[in-house]
Every structure is written in C-alpha cells, then in structure tokens.
Image (tube, rainbow, N blue to C red):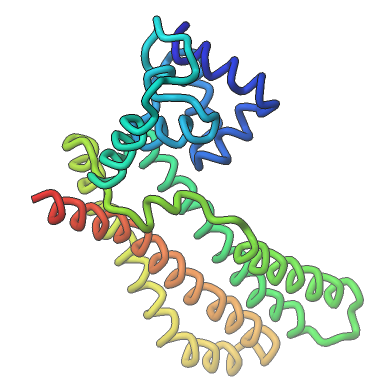
Length: 257
C-alpha cells in the first residue's frame, strides 16, 4: 500500500474527513488531498503528527511493503521522533505558503473590522432623523465589532511556526526572503501614506468645512480617520508575520551550528 492508500484507510477507520485531518495538522485541505492521492509527501513534522494521531509507526506510513501497525520495539520509534523534533521544525514550501495565506486572511479580517467600526461614524454625521442612515450606522458598527470579536475567538493555526525553531530548504527560504523584501517596500509605502493622512487630515477637514460645510467636512474627516489606522495596522501586522519566520529561522540556524 502507498502512503496515500494508508491515509485513506486510516481516515475511514477513524471516521475523519480530509478536512478534519487538515484542521488537526494545521495545513490546507489541498495539501491533504495531495497526500491521499500520492501527489505529495508530508514533511517530517507532519508525518510525526500523523503517526501520533492514528497511533501507527513511521515505518508503516513510509514503507509500501510494510503493513503491520505495531512494531516490537516502540522505544526506537519514540527516540527517532524525539530526535526529529529536537533538530527543528521542518517547513515545506506548501506549509509556508499556507501560513502566509492564513496570516494575510487574518490581517484582512481585523483591519476590515476596525475599518467598518470607524467608517460607521460617517452615517452619524447626517444626524438621527434619517432612519435609513441610522440603520446603516448601527449595521456597519455592529458588523465591524463582530469581525473584531471573531478574530480573537478563532482558534489560531500554524502555532508550530510561531513557537518552534524552523528548518527550510535553502531555495524555499531564499525565495521567501526575496518576496519579503518586495513586500516590505509595499508595507513601508502604506505606513508612510497612513502617517501622511494622519498628519494632514485635521487641516484638510478644516478647509473642507470652510468651503463645503460642516457635514461634508466631518464625513471626509471620518473617512480619513478610517484610512490611516487601517493602512498602518495592515502594514504593521503583515510585517510582523513575516518577521516571525525570519526570527525563528535565525534561531534554527544558530541552534544548528
């Protein structure tokens, strides 16, 4: 039996779906699909997790001609797992892409929630007489608050990447560094734009009030007060997620010397 065939059998016996396994291993559903269809092989860390999850040996998973679930000496198996774990947590390109995609999704979620919370004040600038605008005010604010709360209530994935020493294939890490540099430039521009809006918005609001009236001025003022924090939060959190990879990868290199 191949690794994929064994995974299918283990999932069926345990009553788990591929989605369940992906969630337990903190990988994408597509990654598990590749494994069960023999189009890819999990990295060492995930193989160990699968071995522990289904209570089978690594030999059983990796050797096509190996069909027995139990081995006479489990001590050697445990020692091999401990040695692999102590050497660092191997991160494949697939897992790295999954972590970055997941991180971007969470950043978009929290910034959208904060943005909606601030933007709701635009509808309040027209007073409480208009019921439709009043309804939009509460709807936008509540949606923003719910998105922020949901952000903090969600179970965080990819905890190994945040907490463990990371090991990478050299090409994968080099590609990540190149892309990170281009992203840093983009995030720097976003931070500068945020600071510029923050510093100029009071003067611009005063000018617009003098030219077009208080209501228009307050509306544009709240739009500006929505733009600058979302830009800075988005850029800052995105840079932080990239820095986690760099920091833990550096730790892995130092400890491996």
